[in-house]
Length: 283
Image (cartoon, rainbow, N blue to C red; front, side):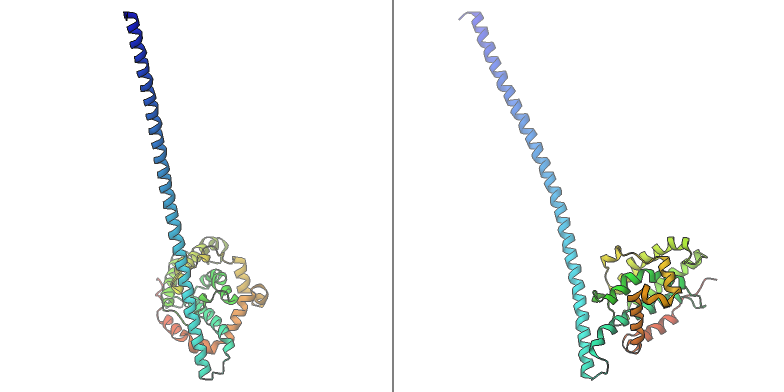
């Protein structure tokens, strides 16, 4: 083998080595790229698993809240049935068929008394009828109308809940703070636009959850009545049966069953106590 032939063979071998090395490098790069893609997919799957876990926990919480709500409703139904049985056993002159109406009337009477207690907030006789109207703007659609429709038995109150005293205390503090910081009535259009939203939020986030022991998600999307509607309610009692039929019917029920409400609801003691716990007005 001459020298030229030897050199050619060596170069040929070197070329093959380089091609093999290039192939190895290419495969290695492909392998590393595949690993990166797989790791990225694992990360994505981990994120999806986290989202699924969050959704499952949210769904679980929703089911638990619904179960608690239904449990409370069943407990109230049982209590109501027991009361009806007791009425039958004692041959009460009140027809059993009226028990649902009595429950509705009692609930509205309790809310009316809470609003009255908050409005009559100070020991010096200061009153806040504007706060009462602003509160009714929220409570009429959120509570009163639902009670009268009869679809939400969990809204019914057979007696004054202990938390009602705390709601009155907080409501009076709210009124006192407003009176100290603002000389205008809540029923002034400009003031209403700003303050009625805050009062609505107070009932949604604080007062109603205290009274019922839980929050209804529907409250978050309920819209309060407008100032014009509430002024119509306040100033035109004769129009109430047409403009506010369900709420008017509720007030009629309260009047019809006032004696039973007084005897069974605990309202006389509540009214007496809230009179004695009014706040001192600022000098």
